[in-house]
Length: 500
Image 1: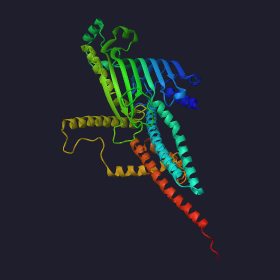
Image 2: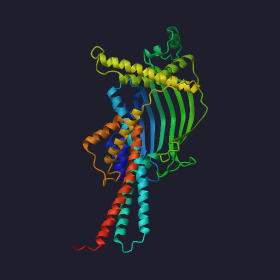
Image 3: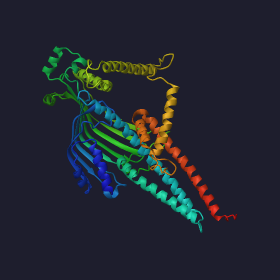
C-alpha cells in the first residue's frame, strides 16, 4: 500500500520538473528503497508554478539518488541527493515561450495554490473533528450505560466516526510528514541567466566602438554578443530540526516546524553567451562565501496572530571585484532582469496571430492597455517613494485602484454564493451529506468559473474557511434535531395506545 502511494507521489512530483522520467524504473527501484536516476533533463516549463518571467533554456541533473526508509516512514527522513545540477534560464520573450502556455501556467499556479490551501485546511479540520469525536467516545464509555441499548449504540457510532476520521487523515499526515522531513543535499550547482543578446546590450548600455575594441583586444569581456550571469554553489544541505535547531525528525502534529539550510561556496561570474569564448573570458565578480538559514514556519496556519514564516540569515564576509566594463555590463543585466516582469506583462497583452492591418482594433487595444500599464507602474513607484519620504499629497498616497461600496457588496454576494456551492460540492468530505443536497452540473460549472477567475484567491480561501465553520454549526443543529426526534420516538413507543 505504502509503495504505491510513494511511487505515485514520487513519479508525479519528478514528472512535473523533468522530461525523461522512466516511471517503470522508478517503481522497480522503490522496492529496494533506493532510486538512482542519471542525466535528468529539465522541462522548459519547469518554473511554471513560479510567477517569474523566465523559463528553462537548458538544464540537467547528472545524478539523483532518493533513499526511502520503508519501515520507518513516520520516524526517519527521506533523503534526496542531487549531484551536478546545471540550470540555464532565459527570458520567456527571448526564448519564444508560447503566450497561450503562459496563460495556462498562470491558471495552473492558481489551482495549485488553492489545492495546497484546501488540503492544509481539511487536514486541520479532520484532526479537530477526530479529537472531538474521540472525546465524545470517551465520554460515552465513561457514562453509565448498563441496560441501555440506545446508549451503547451511540457509543458505537461515536467510536466508528472517530475511527473513520482517523483513517481519512492518515494518508494526508503521512504525505505531509514525508515532505516536511525530507533531507535535501545538492552538490555542484550552477544556475545561469542568459541575457543582453545582440542589439540589447548596446541599447541598454551605449558605449563607444573604440572602447569595445580595446576591451576585446585586452581579453576583458565587454558584454557584446550576449551575457551569461552564473551563480555557482558548491553544496546545499537542508534538514528538519527542533527548537534549538538541532537535527531531528519532526512529527506533523507540531504546530511550528523548524528547518536549517546551509549553502556553501556561493560565487557569481560573468561570461559571454558564446560557449567557445566563455572558457577564456569568464570572470569571477563575487568570490565564494557561505550562508546559513534558520527557518521557523507553520505547516498549517493554526495561529493567525503569529507570522507564517520567521527567517534568520547569517553569512560569511563577501568579497567582490569589478572593473568598469564589468560594472557596466552587470548594471545593464540587472536592469534587464528587473524589467523582465513588466516586459512579460506587455507580451501577454500583445495580439496573437494578427497584424495591425488585419486587426487594427486589437492593436489599438494593446497600445491603450500598454500605456495604462506604464502609468500604473509609475504611480506605484511614485506613490511608494512619496510615502517613504513622508510627502503624501493632501488626498493621501496614490492608489492603483479606487474603493467602491458597490464592488464590496457585489463581492460579498459572490462569496455567499460560493460558500453554499462549496459546501454542497464537498458534502461527502465534510460529512454533511445527511442535510445538504448534491451539487448540480450547472452549479458545478458556476463553482469552477468562480475558482478560475471570478473571485480572488484570498477571497476563495476565506470563503472555504467560512463554509467549514458553517458546516460545523449545521452539524450541531442537525444532531440536536436528530436527538429530539429519537427521544420523541422513544417516548411514543413507551406510551400506551389510546382506545377510540
